[in-house]
Length: 221
Image (tube, rainbow, N blue to C red; front, side):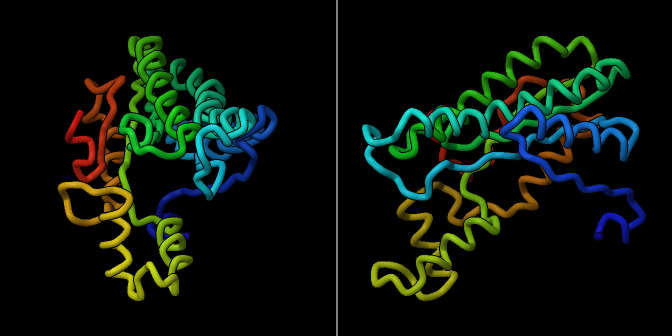
């Protein structure tokens, strides 16, 4: 609604990226709505479980599901939309991974391994189609104050070991889960700014890159 009100063109399509059929439907409807897609932002993904069990207790099915959601969904959309970018000689594919894909967090190895796979897929695909005018890059956010994180913090309210205010919760969240040099969580607009730059003609010389926007948590690498 905001895009349309500002004079832009917008369309919505919904489907299940865990399946080939779902990806087929999404791609077909997007292509029909705009007559072609120049920029693909693969931002689908999540952790399979809300809890963090011992790594020995994580079933292999969770690793498979995590890889399907966090990696194969990206592959599905790239396979369906990149060919017409290549045919026109210009395009952008921007894949999302996570700090968990390159930093040891001591938790969620299924999620971290899948996110690392996104970066490798990006590098390989970028080499395959760079000479066709299509760039492929990865953005790896750290802890960002998304709606999901806000809900996570709100769910902890009232816990005697947690905070009673949003500001205090953010401080505790950072200290316990993502200690980093920049003493705040990221904002969605800061990630969006990186997407806008990579999607623009200003990034013609950038492909196969991993952009870490993580408040400096990767300082030890």
